[in-house]
Image (tube, rainbow, N blue to C red):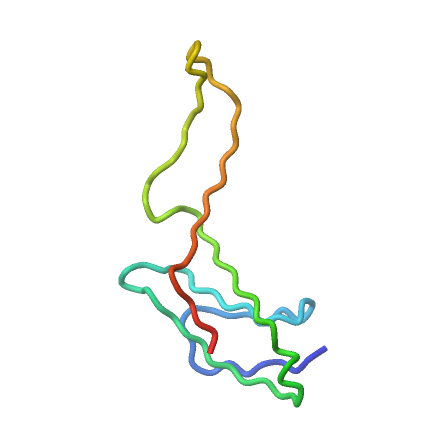
Length: 97
């Protein structure tokens, strides 16, 4: 188990998941008015390499534009066919500094 980080200034919320040895930072809302966020933290330790690699994940319940696939039909007879879909939201840029 590593040291528990001390979080300084931050936008959003954080939690320390000791079971996963992870510091989880969340921004509940990203929009044109709230397009950026930052978090500063310190953690005691001598092995700087133990903090890398850094894992970054982005999740969203919806895409930025309101485009959706509601049904898929056969051209030959117009009958609906089962389908699945996956929507992916990818950030333009992010930095770990």
